[in-house]
Structures are given as C-alpha cells and as structure tokens.
Image 1 (cartoon, rainbow, N blue to C red):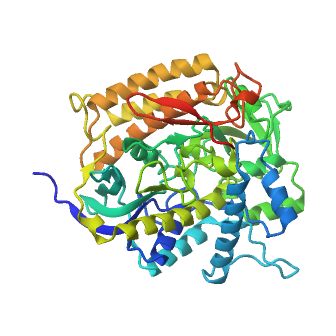
Image 2: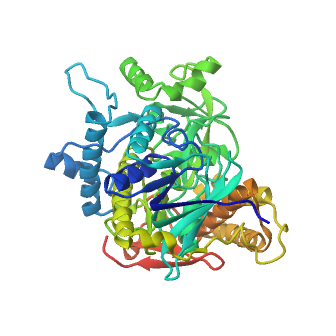
Image 3: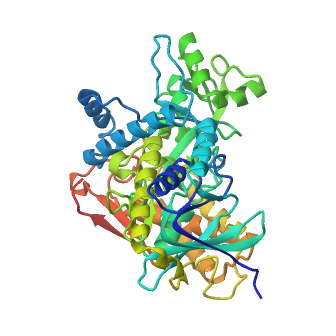
Length: 525
C-alpha cells in the first residue's frame, strides 16, 4: 500500500511562491476564487527575488516617458517584443507598485525633495509583505510542498496537481478548476543566488499536458559574480575595469556587450576586476540599493572599489533569459485549457524579445503576468463551478515518475551531472556554435532516453527525480531552438551565424518530450 494522500480542492491552484505566484494568488482570491498556493520552499523566502533586491520597470504615465521606455531595449531584443504588451505591463506595474505602497505598506524611500522613488524593491521585505497580503486574502499556503505533476480531466484540460509535502512526509493532491504555473525559470542548479528552486519544473509539467514553449533559444544568460560566491548583481559591474591574471587590462570586457570577452578568457585563465569607476556618490547609492551585494566583500575584508578580486560567470538560464511557456492570450492562458503561466515560467518575449537582464522588466513581468494569470484562472474556474472539484482526473507526469523500462536504471545525480556538463560550460552554452550544440544534443538526448526508461523516485526522491527530468527537458528545448535560429538575434548568438537575418524576424515555438520539435511562429511581432 502507498502512503495516504492528502486530498484538497480549490477553484485555483497556484504553483510557486515568488512575486508572480503571490500576485496570481492574491488577484485570484480577490476575484472570488478559493485559492491554494503550493510552494517548493517557504513562500516569501524562496526564489531569486526573496534573496536580494530588484529594480522595477516602473514608469510614470507620461506618453513621452513611456515611448522612451518601450524603445530602450527593442534593438537589444532583436525587435521581437510587442508594444501592445509593453504598454499593458507598464500600466499594470504602475498600478501594482502604487497599490503595494499605498495599501500594502511597502516602505519605499523618500528622496530629499520629498518624492518617493518606486523603481526598486528590497526582495526580503517585498516578499514578506506579499505573503502577508496573500494570507489575509484567504489563500491557503502549502509551504515545502513541491508539485510533482499536473492532473488532467477527460477532455484534456488541466484539473489540478499532485505533489509531496516535505515536512509532513506524505503526498498530496489538489483538484482545481484551473492551475497557474509560476514556478520560475531554469538555472540548472548553477549556484546563482536564490535559484536552487528554479529547476524548470513548470515547463516540464506544461509540456507533459501538451503546452508549447517559446523563446527557449534566449536562455544563455550568465551573471558576473565574485569567484566562489553566488551573488550575480551584474548591473554594478558597469563600474568595473577587468584585468587578466598578469594585471593587464582585458580590452573589450564589460558587463554589457563584453561578457563574451570575459567568458573566452575564463576558459584558460582567471579574470579580475575592480569597481574603480564608481565615484563616492555612486558607491553610497550602490550600498543603499543592494546591500547584499557587499556582504561577501565585507566578510572577506575586500574593498571592491579599490582592490582587485577574481570573478566568474554563473549560468542563469531562463531566469534571466526570456524563454518559457508560450502565452496564448492576454490573461496569460497557455495553449492548454485550464492552464496559465506567469513570471519566469512564462516566456517574456512579449515585452523583452530576445534579451533581458536582472530586475527591471523581469520584476514588472512577474507582478503583471501574475495578476493577469490569477484573474484569468479565477474566471475560468468560477465558470466551471463546483463540479470541477469532482471530475475524474488523470495524473500526467512521466519522466522520473513512471519509467517506461526497468525502474532504478538511472540515478538523478548522474542525470543532473550529465545535463550540467552540457549547459554550464561557457564554450558550449554561452559561446554557441552549431557543431557544439549538435554534440551536446547527442549527449542530452541519450541522457533523456536513459532517464525516461529508468529514473524513478518515491517520497522525497520523487522531487529530486522530477527536477533532474526537468533540467534535461529544458536543456533539450534550449539547444533545439538554438539550432533552429541560424542567426544571431538578442542573446541567442551563434559563432557560425554572427549576423542577424531579416528573414528570421519571428519567434520560435518548441515542445515535445521524447521527440523535441521546433517551428517558427508566424504571428506578427
């Protein structure tokens, strides 16, 4: 006999615990839905936002300012963004941030002139308040309760999810009228701060029920961090001078537009830097804006403004890339009925095209898409009514749960190591070439076949097995999409196709598990 299953029902189930998840849960509850939120960690403290500070794409509703904001990154993103979506996100972000200040009690700083800049958030305080607001709205929060698979109804619509409650030590199942996946992106357990929960689970679950993904070629984001540390606040390195081991300046190296120079040098030697281009005023502002950036330096007794320190690049995948689950409507529905996506789990192409970075657009997209997904899911579920809670359901999970061959023939640690060996090295993922991508895919496809046939987890090991399967699936979607884009656009750069091709001004959809497919999306962008 198996372990007893905790059975729950809800109108809307939100999977995740970061800003997108909490905004989704909050707005679904305010729309009249009964909401359950299930987080892999402790909602309000897990994930990339809770671990640090973030800028926000918060722009006053001045037409000229809005036009300038929308134009600022269009070229960087390969002109794949959509101004209609950008305008919607700017409006929603402006409203949500003002609500956070005026009714949510967030303590935005006050400038000397009495104004209150609202273009930045301290992650720990932001997420602490979002947890409180979500609970006050009546949302039931399941902490330390990772979802391991979706449930579907007879018509193929999503009807809930199942998972494992780590601290209680038993499985659980939530029957729901609709599900919002706000599980974050995929950073491949690279060690970047706050990304250990970002293993691409939501993308795997979505693909298992037939959802599509988009923009997965825009996934080779790497953040700069001091060597042997995890804090990737790359924006501050715009004040840096980079050096080779012999002390000579590394020409062309920069935090923007010169990271490939750093990557090439790191393949053979160490790279050092000093934040020596920051004047005293900038130094003070940096410490106030992102105090956690300086904790490592302070503990090591290093003044980063005057002393050289070794750096590394940490893979951040789709956390700072733009790819994810494809959005099929203004309410952030996916291509599968009953399933919605928000935050880093969803593609950010509508507002970023093929390029993004840390904070700013990411934070704005999280809260905006979270609100829309929560409202959309609530409307969908409430239209179904209470009958949705008693529908017959089928478990949709495959790899890591239900092997097709002899169970026990694959180990999740070996799967993770194999995947990381193909996606973490700079010369495979960052400095992409068709031949290298093809070679990596042979390894990844073989890894998938082995895990699909033999990887199986039970209890706590179910979570580990599913994470390993998610890493492998995300890597294969990334590299198949990268091979399909035979040009360099946004962050999807190819050494063998260094120029942008006007004929490829389109997005690329991908999906599939045992057989991964890609196709161009011909809708206008």
